[in-house]
Image (cartoon, rainbow, N blue to C red; front, side):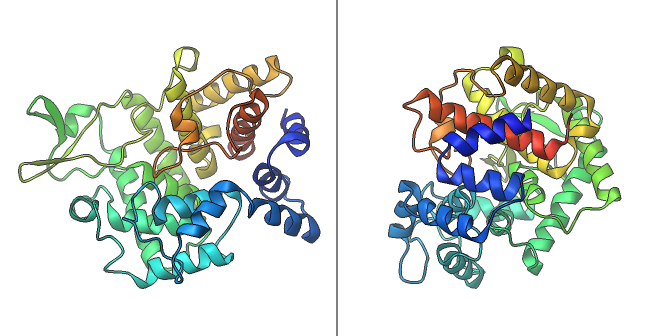
Length: 340
């Protein structure tokens, strides 16, 4: 199945997908192939747009958590195949590291600090995760956030029911005092780093993800700070036991995003429910000669921001581009999950 997808994408997909299939999945790319594909990627409209927004120091003069700010820009470049060594990424990350106490002076500033202080991960976690997107994990502030991510998943192991962590407040749910809880950024930072990986930590995450499956569906839960309700970054974190046969298009995007992260972390093949989800994906691919041909359409796929965005093709105005994008995401899940 993987071979079928690889061959199709190398024949039909955009330069970013071809590059990542060769370098990331097949681990086989010549220097000349890499140079030529990177040159093509540099002509990509999204990549060009990011380069034009950068000032002479590489920074983008918007709130770093803005949909066109540094966070999204590093994520997009990394997804396109441009890592920390490229000048666009290098300069932006250098500025982000240099601005240790002033990188977040926009809309996230106050709530980001509260989320960091209360153990839910805010501005500092996001900052560290941005570096992880580009392939950097050796800096101390990144390692600190990785340790904190593992502590949050360790906390999940102690939870027997949602009643252990939530209480009603003004017709909504809030976390009880002292609760720590993982966000999408905790999954992301672990998915794109490797220094934390040991049998002990892997078993911790297998147990925590199994617990999140058992607790699913998880409602929207806010963090209460004084009388203020703050939403943690819970995108994709509400249902770890998705029913793929009935999912809407928006839910499919979140499934692809979450399942790729879980596959990269290495827990999928150890958890029955996740195995079953990948097997369902395999059946869909098998029915369409190895391609993901299911018709899906939602702005979550195509609009890149801090949470949304999956499509590497120019657009989905043709069926072929949609198939390439979704087949590529399917390939990554198969590749990293190691489910046979």
